[in-house]
Every structure is written in structure tokens, then in C-alpha cells.
Image (cartoon, rainbow, N blue to C red; front, side, top):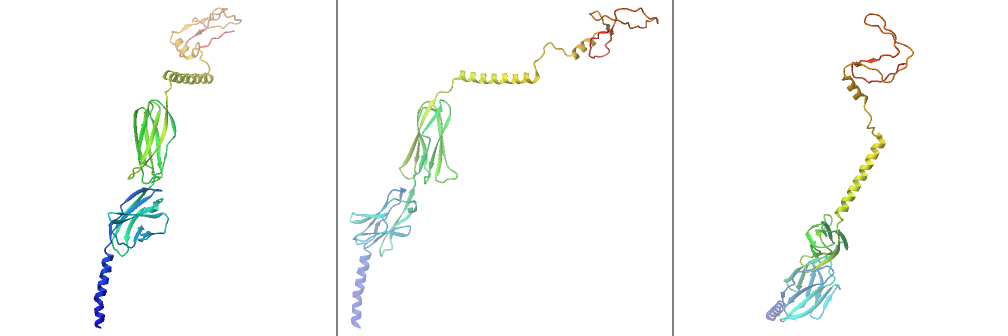
Length: 322
């Protein structure tokens, strides 16, 4: 019994040594946050003190790479390892190849038999495409718009314009596409005065990367003002002549010698009543007897006397008595 008790202190000493040796290594510096482009490489470093036995790298809670002092344990070819020493500490570097959007998230470096770890966050950005006309023909000193469309970007880029054209005015504004969260539009308004190149530049936030697309601008002179006005007048004259011809066809030509009966009647009725004799002699074969004031019939005459008394305005017609 006494021998058993004598062995306990020795066991405690061994356990203490193991515990001390297990706690002698630790993470000196963990990985740092990184932002990379889709399709590129992402690198994370984890520095640990000497004496470590196993280093594990995890992405969003899943171990994707492990290292022993002898060799790395690779389970996915997209996740590889590099190692070196700095100031007496061991540095493990995890390299993610061909980064995808699904790789975005939490990165963690941890040690076996240690409750301490180092963590970081991986952000993935996508550089899309720029859609812009390759060439444009515009009129000198006339305002025009040029549109540049950024498609498939994450996050949306900052869009600017480089103007290699002599202009009297230029301005632009950008806005996101309402139905596409990964697309934006920028519209440049300018008044050109000569040929040149316009360049649309899209910059990704958080990364020193950009993409650009250019359009060649050809400026033509405006049409001559005199010839333009001449064409306008010619067009107006043709239209007026056509309308006049259509009116004449429908209503006939105007007779400027015609006088309405109503106007003649009005003039005649305004004069005092008087007898009227036709200017042309009328040959008659019969006579028309009339009663005189004394009741006797006058002698027959060969020329009839015709009188017209205009009591009211009416039409006047010449009558030939036979």
C-alpha cells in the first residue's frame, strides 16, 4: 500500500511535465482579413511558437487543411500550404486557389489541445464587364449622351469618365439597375467640339483594380443654316401650293366680274321710282289699252311703255314684250 502511494508523486510530476509541454506552444499571431477577386488566390498566415504538434485550417467551420511537423495533410487541391520561420516562430501559410464566391466567410487557424485560435474574414469581389459602343458619330456643338453599362459586378463599382474630346460642357451620373443587383449604368452628357476618345472606368471598392472601355467619337459639322432654311421654305411652299390646288379643284375658279343679284336689287331699290324704257326698240304686233284719268281710252301706240315700280328689294329681270 505504501508503495502505491510512493508512485503517485512521480505520476503527478509526469502529468505536470506533459501539461507544461502542451502549453508551451501557442498562436503568436493569427490570420488577417483579406479581400480578393473571384478566380484569384487568397493567402492567410498563422504564426505559432515552437513545439506545436498539429495545425488546422478551417473555412466556415470545416477543416480544409492540416499540418504536422513532418508534412501537410491536403484534402482539397484548392487549399495548399507553405511554411517558413520568422523570429524563431513557425509560420503556416494557407493558400486558396481559384477563389469562388462560396469561399467568402470565416477563416480559422487552431492548434491541437489548445483552446486558442486565430480567425479572419475572407471577402470575395467580382469584376464584371463593361458594355459601351465602340464608336459614335455626333454633331458638333450639339448635346449628346453616351451610356456605359457595368454588368455582373460585386459589389457595384464606382464609375468615372476620362474625356479625351474637346467639349464645351460635360457631366455624368451613375445609378444601379433596378432589376439587377450586380449591374449599374453611367450616362455621360457632353457637347462635343472635335473628335477624340471617351473612356468609361469602373473601380472596385476595397481593391486597387479597375476595368475600362473606350468609345471613339467622330464629330461632324452641323448642316448649313441657309440651305436648311431654304429646304424649310421649299417644303412650306410645296405644301401651300398643294392646298391651293385642292381648294380650286373643289370650289372652282372665282369669277371676279360676277355681281350678286342682291347687291343690284339693293342699289335699284334705293333710287326713287321712275318709268323705265328698254334701250332696244321692241317690235310689237298688238297694243295694250289703258284707262286715262278722264276715263277715256288713249290712242294706240306702236311702242309699249313699260314702268317698273320697286316697292321692295327684289330681283330685276328684263322682259321683252312680243
